Length: 203
Image: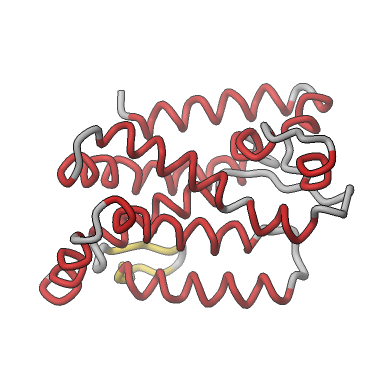
């Protein structure tokens, strides 16, 4: 079983269990006030295992399914211990993507955030790094969008919506997770930038 599939199954089981126990659900959310003032650091990890409903869960896990195994294979090609690095990418993506929310809402005891979107964005953008012209399909658009164009639009949209802040989506997590995922291979091996450029030009 791939790591991607294991994460999907584990996340689904965790979310289902939390839906049946509201007290457990509340304890696992990312609540910056509780993280900072009560030292409940586990929330930085567990919030990525929670989802609001089936739509939220399925959308995140489908995105992870479509890109996760590709990124696993790419990490195995360029690095030793690719399986471990994929886990590190996913977990660190979820943790790092939560930092802006913690800093912004550390004094707001009513703010909560859930979902694997930050971690999934990290995997998606690692995929774009390894294959800049990777075709990405969006609902109702019948032709694939090159990964680098999708990535640019995603970053601009996330930044705009983060500043607007008029919905219940954690756009800060999307933006931070995406940037981290793209930089992750470079942090491990800066020489990969040459491969990125070659794939961008010749891919």
